[in-house]
Length: 373
Image (tube, rainbow, N blue to C red; front, side, top):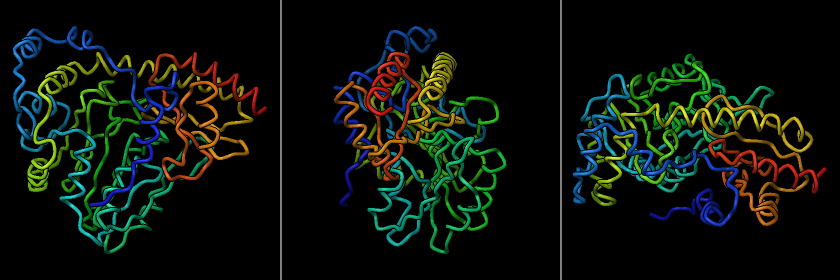
């Protein structure tokens, strides 16, 4: 299989470990090992201290799947397959889709959620948003118009990266109704699950609502533990998960034993991770809102409904990629341009999960006012 370069990840590879400031990161600051172990129970600490660095179960160790199960209403132990999130997505597309199938994906979207299926020979229909005053919005009527007799899969991502959009409960159910009526599978990327800015934006997991769906979640975004490289697929479709398990034998085979224990600790003590992350996200959104008021001549910004990112419009006379390259070279601020999402040349992603946001905005504001006002 030949596959196109991953534009977002190639951009991060270029700058993530050299730029001084990461204004576009979608994850929150990573927690230290000391912190993770400090919130562990006595049993969890014993699990860590007695850990043997051998192989683990392909589907995930029993103690980890038990911790995962506790965050769903209907999912059972044999309806979970643990993997890295990127691997899980790659496997799912390979076992579910065939050349000629139609896949509907949101746009802009994390590239792997559509690129794998595209390079498998599927046709891609993009569900595009409306950029309104008051925020980004994906209209269910637009989605309905995209569905054809060849549509095999609808791929959604809520909370949405990069726009921060989240549908209402009613809209969420309408997506399910559209799929159920036509026998279409839904793949729900829920990597930003529980990063809700208020009660209204919190959604149940898709796998608890629709029997023909697969949900993806993991430790990177919600928990601030991206270095664990841990995620999982959940579904009532056990036959599909068995195919995922078998395909995984050709890739990682099993998961990292230390990551499984640390992930279990995080899942069993979720508030210790999510509450500080959400406090930071809310604070940084308020900072950026004030920043926007001062610099509204140069950027358009609507507060995200959920998640840890927003997608701003740059009101400047050059492509976002050119602006971003100048910015990082002049200030050390890495800003992710919309070209990496294959979504025009006028937007950029902002990430709200970093504690040095005040310093970043000070440097960013000085730069744009000096160069573009």
